[in-house]
Every structure is written in structure tokens, then in C-alpha cells.
Length: 312
Image (cartoon, rainbow, N blue to C red; front, side):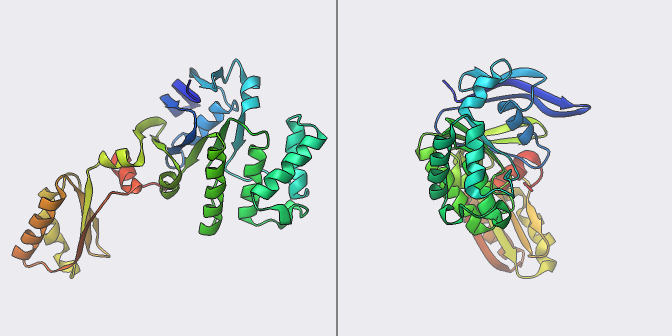
């Protein structure tokens, strides 16, 4: 049984179609990432999966339970952390977690024990008795994440959990997320951070303008736009147009041109052959090369190729 199964889900807000017949199956265990820019439909889909919105059509099952007809049962097996840390600034870190535990009917003693356990796990024990207003952005995010799994949910939803964090805070939160998955949690992560998706997720889906447009591992998605990216930079910006014209047909798609850096790049089907031909053509045209190299495409280049725009 899939952890999450989305069958033809559509959702509109007035004239705006937020989701258009989305079909998605997420297996149990591991991390699944949902990518897309602002307005793509990620948060709307998450809200439907977590019973906060009802779909206009189609169905969603989470843990085998229907999110509309069995919403109460669904809420008992999931955890959810939204885009913004939802903690009470007037309560201490421990009190915030205990409050959430009590709301989930854990009981006073169990809620306190669970709060202390999570504070240790998130490296917040030293700040347990400080009020939320004294927490840094990274600490607030970790505390909010801790509140989302205080009941040890089998399925956890994280909506852009590292937004606004510095690199150190992001890396710390990644470690916590990995520990949860090792413990058996199925985790659905929405993000605009393509590095984050590649670092954490076993499977990745890209959603744009309400439609699911691609799905697979990071390597599989990269293969969709060609095996390699050929990139070179000319010594003089005046030679850029001639370099583009001389090498245009070597690329399997459109060339990406950066006039400021004097750089041209694009995907190539046969990397070794394309590299040799490019050097010969530029030399024959009297164009001086500042540098040249082959590399694997990035997820951002995959996103650009599939949607026509870069991830934000």
C-alpha cells in the first residue's frame, strides 16, 4: 500500500486553477520531494493531503484513509509543519511542545516526557526554558518541526521547512529530517531549493501551474535533458555572437548565453564528440576560449528545460 495516493485531484479558487488532475503515488518509507516555484500548486496539494482543504474533484488517500470522508483518522497518523514556524513566543520551548502533545491527547506526563525527548533530539535542551521570542530563526524552525512529530506520525508533511535559514541552519535541519526517516517515517517535502531536494529525496516530482510535469530520481530527471552540459567561455565578449553561431548545431537544445561572463552552455547528446567539434570550430573561427568543461546538468537546468523558467 502506498503511503499517499493522489488520483486526479483538481482544485480552483475562483478563476484560478491551482491543481489540474494531479496523479501521484508515494511509497512508504524515505523522502519524497515536490518541487515547483511560488504559485505552482505545491501548498494547495499539501493542504488537501493534510485535510485542510477539500479537492473539487478526484481523491486522496493517506495511509489508506480518504482525506475527506476519514479526515479525523487521517489527522491521527500524520504530522505537518507549514512554511512558517507556528510557535507561541510567550511560551518556553518545552511548554510549546507540551501544549501540542496535550492537544493530541497524550496526557500531561507523556507530553512532558515526549517534549524532553524531542528537545534533546533537536539540540534544544539548553534552551528548553527560554521563551520562543528569544529563539533564532533556525531554533524556531527546529522547534516547529519537533511539534510536527511529537506523536511519532507515520507520515510527515514539511512545506518548505528551510525557507529563510542560513546554510548552517539548513544543514542542521537536514540532519534531523534524515534521522526521522531512519526511524521509519515517510516524509513528503515541498521545496523551491533544488539542492535540498537532491540532497535529501529518493524520489522527486516537479509541479508547475497546477500540473505534475515530471517525476523520478534526481539522476533520471537529469537524463531527460541530456547526459551532459557543455559549457565554455570566450576571452572577448565581442566574440560571443560568432561563437554562438559557430556552435549552435552542436547542442541538442537551446543554448544558454550569459553576456556578462561571455559564457555559452547547453546540453549535448554525445559529450566527447561535441567537445572535440566545439574546439575545432572555435579555433577555425579565430575565437579564443577562456575555459571549457563538461558536467552533469543541475536540477535547476532540468527545471528550466521542463518549464521554460528557472526555479525561484
